[in-house]
Length: 252
Image (cartoon, rainbow, N blue to C red; front, top):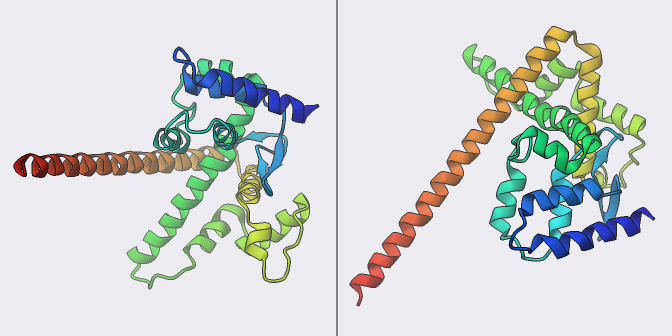
């Protein structure tokens, strides 16, 4: 029944997203609200929308749904929306919650803090370790990331992954296929969320709050850097187009 409901949700989206009077982003969010599946296999690939029954990746589902709609929305416009890490997809919080529903809204918050912010926190701590090594005059090494795992989660990544794999029931990889078999996007997100919950269990409230602020600050810096990068690219494209038009005009 859920599979039929999913097909019905896709059909409704296709019929409404091209409407001139529709806000296509809001239309996609409404389709997300109707979506019944926590995960599915599409073309041999597993899409894990709801991690552990708690953390909802609305962007992954939006990408899946928009992929069914052909070229109605330009790829560049889609990617700009889906790649933006802003908390409520560019909407006000009440509007976003109304669009996706209360349950998916709460699960989205779990994903945002448990996966998106957690990944940013790990990057921030890795950078701190690197800066400390540079500041103390020590030679740079490839161990900054491992040190970040140890500081945040109390163990090296490899051992943490093995514990997660056993607890989550991730099947052992085939010989020579470890990265492809185990380290999919879905499993990496699940691993990150597992690390987040592990950190919640082991940290006191003050440390949790401090780490959350650090992760949010790093996420915003990365977001602003990406905005500046896109602005520069667009400026370069406009400059090139202007130069090209001048060449054509002079050649007449």
